[in-house]
Image (tube, rainbow, N blue to C red; front, side):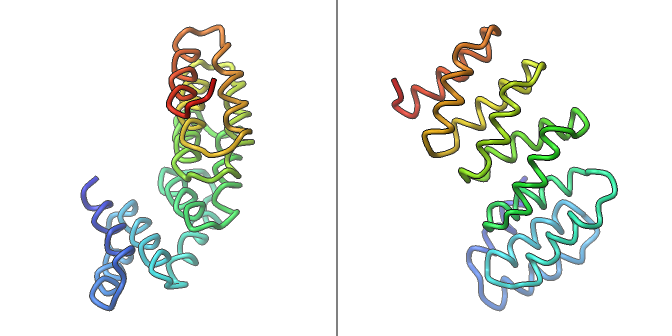
Length: 173
């Protein structure tokens, strides 16, 4: 939401006032905002932000929405643990978090997410395959494009249409 966007913007802005606001949100009562504040701190080069995000992944006995968000932000910071966590969730997580993980993998913008999304593209559930097509459309590279071409042949017309649209937006034949 708006508060998350504001915290992300503070992280991109940097500086002492931004860091102070992010540290305050980091210790606040709203877990999703605390995760976003950790990302903001990481984005502005503060090690504490990255460490807090990694801590969410290490401390999670069961996967949570906060863990998915922390992994997403770690991936955006270029930390392999983020993509790895999301890939495991996309493959083996509970259904609601599997879909969140697939979406988050696409939003990382990182080519390292393609193998996990290619796995999601073969899921038995059409909703997962459809979301994988959307996510793959956000990622760079020939491997993402190849996975989209496979999805464009999916027996579910909605999945095939989503993949075709993603391919067209890439300018792929």
